[in-house]
Length: 506
Image (tube, rainbow, N blue to C red; front, side):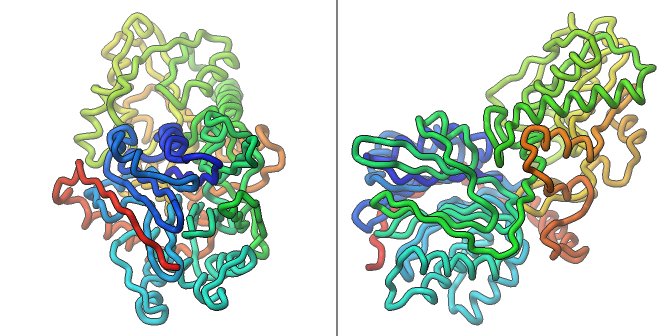
């Protein structure tokens, strides 16, 4: 999971890109980067850490130009940050291209071999995003005539990218002297939305991972980029688009609605907030059908993403909704922290309980999902220590039983608490008196009710059905092997940053 932005404006774009990254910070807290374009030259600054820590006034002044792209990177658990893998990536041949990518290529190893043996391109990092950049650059070179580009040539190149690349990808790229290109994989797994802003000097355009960035920056949402579609906005502000993948179909990652996206965003036309309210309603229906014997005194959310679900669940059950935990906002998400011991310790640093809301009550705790179970176990224990008579636990998502290979850095099956346990066994593992999981079909229906045009979703972490059709047991084993090998954190590069002024090819 990462955040991507691309803007073609009528005035300096650096502040817009910075503000947009702040709005997408929840999508990536490991590294951030901005590249702007000025007279066929790129200005780049990127570094490790939060957006506010990467960019200073001197960096922003150096990012001149009215066109630019930006990226915030999601960390990889168990591995060290490597500045060389911070995005956007740059390649100078054939045109000078920078690229930011959200997702994961499932055939990156095969493509890397093709790059070396056939395309005669060298890949410098282990990032699949660099592979994707080089595939795009190679296809642009092959599609162009005498290295001249027009929208149709660009779209022909993207069609070849779709033909070669497998997996999930929402991409924003900038071609020196030409404009901003954005495209989405043929399954539409990762989100991308287009915004526009009418000014006295013409229309400005933006591409972003989520609509919240479009709205907050004063743009208006035009529409989502369709699966397999490419959008190109030239430096004069002319908008071009074309479907580049025959047979494309929309299958958004349902975990975006459960956890990843901000509640004030629209993902493929569905309100994330509304979807989460619907998840709570579905949970209430299930509890009234199957768990009527539970005597629930209070419903308490585990901040923050479970609040809408907990609120609607309490309303459906007719019991009080209370805030029982206070969140320390100055510590990162435990979901993405490497190491079980670090993760468990950080729960106590991240949350503290309000004892009066638990004392002598049967408390129903609501979370968006249960992944490793470490956080859930600690929170159940905190509720008991605060005087709860009984602690029930509800998950707005079904059991997470399989790894995600499409851009969410979920653990291997050995680390997933529900991978080899029944729901009753998971409940005992986390110490709850009862555990209620959302049903998968109920989750799908909850999102569909927020946009009835959505019919299919990417749900592999719940059902093990990988929609791209290329995921084998050998592939999953290889992922586990790489994760195990990457557990040594290596050298510290927390303060690493990179500034570049790149003179691009004519």
